[in-house]
Amino acid sequence: PRILILDEATSNLDTESEQLIQQSLRDLMHSRTTIVIAHRLSTVAQADLILVMEGGEIVERGRHEDLMARRGVYHEMVTRQRDAMQAELLSETPEL
Image (tube, rainbow, N blue to C red):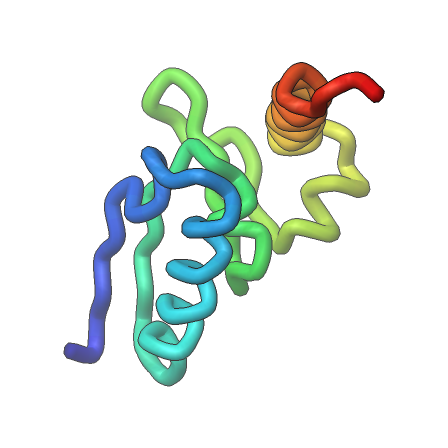
């Protein structure tokens, strides 16, 4: 298809499975218009255009790097997710 819509395609996957799926999706999305709906922001970090919605409104738009540099809503969301993932990894790491 020329247009591909993915709605939470990686939401319930562990990190390793998510990375494998994302690689397959990158191949599938090549030369197609793709709309990705995701709460897991690593899923959209490589997108050409990210639209950040809050309360049903678009509050930010841009590429990952630009949105991170603005330090707005997207930056805050990425930071929270990264911190939560790091905390989860630390809690799973056995102590020596």
